[in-house]
View 1 (cartoon, one colour):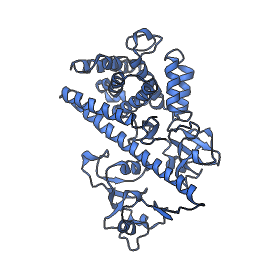
View 2 (cartoon, rainbow, N blue to C red; view 1 turned 90 degrees about the horizontal axis):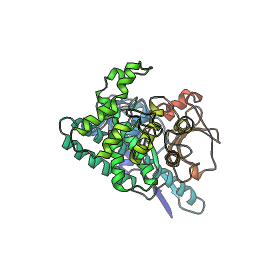
View 3 (cartoon, helix red, strand yellow; view 1 turned 30 degrees about the vertical axis):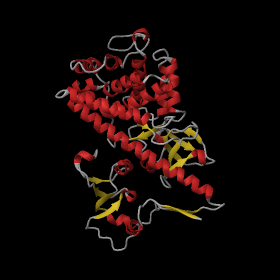
View 4 (tube, rainbow, N blue to C red; view 1 turned 180 degrees about the vertical axis):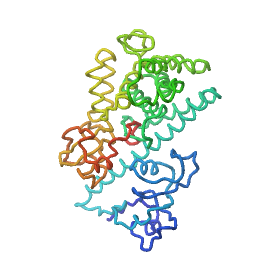
Length: 428
């Protein structure tokens, strides 16, 4: 019996859109499914500006992250405004047809899992972008409508908890906002995800998990009161500028406590997410005895994220090593071990060399920590695709630095894109 597994929902769509189209006009806009997006096209989204994360509806596709973001949106087709000639090129089809017999059954099973993983990563991406948009709404309401802001925050937290507990075991996926650098809202979502993963491993009560999630989402809200020229400065800060930055936990605490709506545990996280258990943090130099577990968890997750952003440590694995080497005694040892368990040996975003000579970027953690899901290409940036190492006789040889990749491989892997995390939408 033959089984056909196809992306398209009808034969008409398949015949209309699969790759070669003789006589394509270079000037007249055409509609294509998002599965056929590729670099070089200029496309228009059939959405209002409030329904997508881009600045305008017209998008020139220069990066793979842009394509991934469009595929994560609730849209099946887009209009091609320029570059339609690229659609004449032969490309790998998204359609897979396999014979379900003694020789092909195992291959079908493997390809099904690969397809499911691709869908899961896109779903995680879509959920992340939705959360970022909700967080932006939350931030915009804090000053003018604090009660509305609190309602949005409560809904967002419940949504994240639902995603966390979707499956018995939770895993992490690499996601991107498409922006050149992290924002307060993106950073807040990513820290909340890591914090909730730690809390789940520790089997904390739902009430504490809600406090952790909300505190993490809002922990950097005080930075909105720091001038942009200081907050976005890439070089070293002057002592005066650093002092201004160090006041952001106080600013955030003041902003939220003024409404009288946010729980004390949440306010504590916002004020003390830069404290260390040895008393060397700021703003109040607290020690472990005065830091609830909820605050300690967010402080650790934030510290890890800080290594990936402010210090420009490109590899999550290197950032994790930094915590072990430089934060001994500053975070609870048990919490650091739990973070390692959550992130795995090769955290999402880690660049790796595979035993077959190809290079890749880890996209999703799995139960088998040495065999994550990897977006891979050859050293020249070609033959790109998602690989499930658990289904291959291939292993990770070593972790790579960005500068070890060719320029083409860097582009294919989006090696320098900001790293964010969200719950994997798949039972890995």
